[in-house]
Image 1: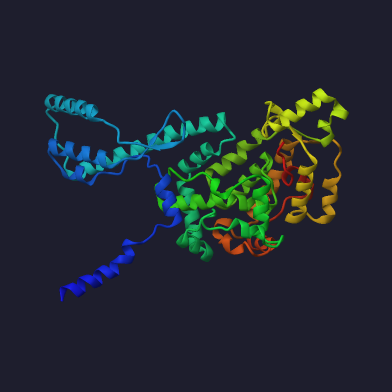
Image 2: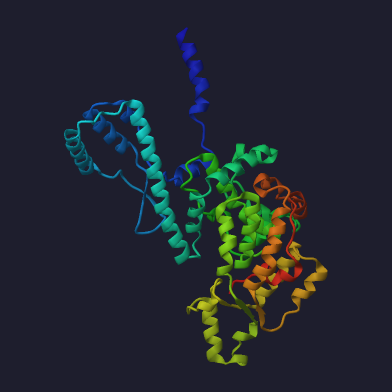
Length: 434
């Protein structure tokens, strides 16, 4: 009688034992780096010094976090637990001396010990956040082209905003399904080749055209490391993966002024502090002057062999040139014929600007001079403020995977997207890479 019951229980429990982790759970367990070790349950229940030392040593041996490699900032590396035996011996001797010297000393009971341990963990967590935040801020200023530093600052400062985004998604039917199914925009769940074969007016085709034209990949986004709660971590992961969809919806490139304008729109939708800081301090990184050099600027028959060769080497990266940096005060773009044709084709197929207004942007002189910082402060940011307030459905509340084969204009109407003015196309709708 007992064997059939045991067999039935084993058969019922087998699906639970064989449950596979979702892609996000696998990613979270792989990249998550807790700021402080998890509390040890055995150390709080012991009262003698010998049992407490043994429990602390066992907790240290069982916890092997992502140790921080300070030689290469912000790269976690797996390692063994740190040997603090000498530190424990020193602290034990200091505690015994203090106990002998004080007549008012008394051992805390279990509740007081757990409360003190909780306070200590919160203080340690705060200090770790300050330490990592300062290093990330320094890295963001020293190496602005690396997105990992800004990503870490966003993780350390977005707890309340992530809670609000999670609540907003849970109250929306599509957002709730996203939270329950936790889809990821990467090659494990999305067939990029199939998206490229979709009709030219669909979201999937426009999304892949944007990614391919700028050499981007959805799976290359920085993973969330310093958000301990899984729900918050997924919300932030979803926001990062939807950023390129935002570019597609608004028909904007990856220039500095376009990114700063999108940050202001995202602040209205998400409330993330880093989006507000990016829209406030981002104009300082925008070029003051951008010059689009014609193709004949590198023609030896026009400018001479020596100058043409130097310009070609700078454009190809063989020689360093500060003017080709996207955030240089004077940004020079050497535009080839192929780049110009690709830009015009992407503008025509994305539908971001009407046909009758595109003629204005096509009237370009041989050497076109733009003023990105002035355009950003006077026109792009006011438009972004209005566009952010006009959004009806935030993008993180949309199950975008179900919209890939539908027209792009339908999603724009569903979300309440206001496109940028047509005369700003040279700033936000053309490839600014040199």
